[in-house]
Amino acid sequence: MGDSRFRSMLLLVIVVLVPASVHSAVRKYTFNVVSTNTTRLCSSKSVVSINGKVPGPTLYAREGDNVLVRVHNHVPNNITIHWHGVRQLRTGWSDGPAYVTQCPIQSGQSFLYNFTLTGQRGTLLWHAHISWLRATVYGAIVILPKKGVPYPFPKPDGEKVIVLGEWWRADVESVVKQATMTGLPPNISDSHTINGHPGPVAGCPSSAGYSLQVASGKTYLLRIVNAAVNDELFLKIAGHKLTVVETDAAYTKPFTTDTIFLGPGQTTNALLTADQTAGKYTIAVSPFMDTVVPVDNVTAVGFLRYKGIQPFSPPHLTATPPINATAVTAAFASGLRSLNSPNYPAAVPQTVDHSLLFAIGVGVNPCPTCVNGTKTVADINNVSFVLPTVALLQAHYFKLQGIFTDDFPANPPSPYNYTGNPPANLQTTNGTKVYRLGFNETVEVVLQGTSLIAPESHPIHLHGFNFFVVGKGLGNFDKGKDPSSFNLVDPVERNTMSVPTAGWTAIRFRADNPGVWFLHCHLEVHTTWGLKMAFVVENGKGPNESILPPPPDLPQC
Image 1 (cartoon, rainbow, N blue to C red):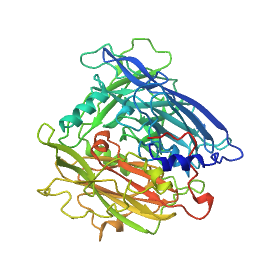
Image 2: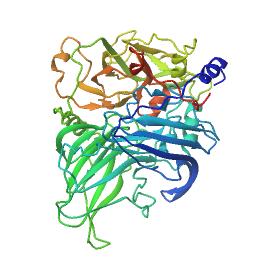
Image 3: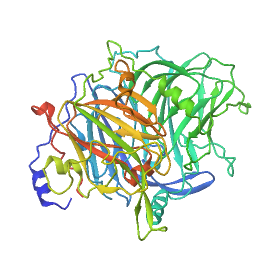
Image 4: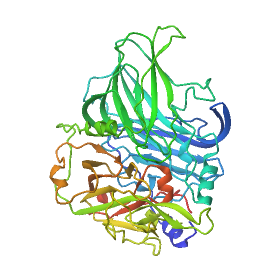
């Protein structure tokens, strides 16, 4: 950062280690950001990766562990890493979104991410959080329970990590730059992947698929991650049921289904029992899109193989849900409930200090240099968020002026029939606006989908917190009627939740984590267009309710 005020203040910062419990361990990882020549879909290209792998390494730790990840940037691109779903209690400097909690790690530089996994166990993910680099810079996080603490479900015989993604034949950063220059939507991906493998597809029948080996009669915990850039996905395994036991690193009541549905950034742990006739069974990953927006409609294919079968056994096939299977997504979401047991209670806020209505959607703004003289944008409450050139958390912590304003609207400035006929004016305002919260205040946000240009499902991610999904519905939220049906007992707890097409979702959380926290659509195309905002949570009383000082190696802009 070029601001001398920040540099001088940073020199005065005392290095503070992230507190960890007596029985925790320190887990150290090294991430080398490198260019890697990779072949997919019968063509090769150079991609940005971590340690030369796509997906990158899985991080393993236990609840309560202190995690240290040293990131060395060996590529020309700026880079940051976001630990998606990690609460980052008082350690917002390690959250990762570029220009929100940190300036990027520039070429030739490094940064130590330092955080403790407090009160969390399950599966999360990490990914790049600048431009569209997370197309190839991503991986899983496995948080095991503390030693001696069992799962609240039968112990599986084995565990498997399954990370879903997207793949472009073209250079993804070039795709983004072209879209920005023309003002048009970016080109969709060419395939989906399972642990980096698309499987056989048209034009490349020899493309390898992922193989999951199981033993007859054994039960496996599948840790499923959707690291796709823009696509909500279904996952099915021919002939097998899956019992969901956790979403977004929060335990759920067991829920059995034949189809898993995940938006980008969501994770699901599910038990699979190898209880079918020994053979080879298709694993199919296909997209969901229940509106007119173009989407990559290529199904990624892998195989579940029973041990001992012949190498070239014919596979048992499965039918993927229709691409517009809204009923399947709704049934999956409705089946999820927090475990809400004595050991894992659902601490749902029963009262609300801030009641917010966020209308989310897309719009059109003037752009004299673009192809049609306009560009597609996205917004929350008619604000297309503009990232600053100085990280918001630095500006907040050091009280720098002129970086952001704290007047983000609590409600749409000009209410309209959100899911009916759109207003004639589709233009939005640009701004770097935040919404300010006091420490430990309770918040309800109704995320209202809109029909502007095209209604669409939006997976919304909140950094720094888990939230409870207390209600959802189609059409416009009715403040006088809909809250009476809210589930305030055992709603599912998540960090990312899809807002249904032309519908709404209500979430509640407690602002018990001081810092600056990003909220945005996890469809990268919408984040790029401006469908994002940030909450500033003030410090509470004393050091245990205050954000830690910034680390001495925090990158400068």
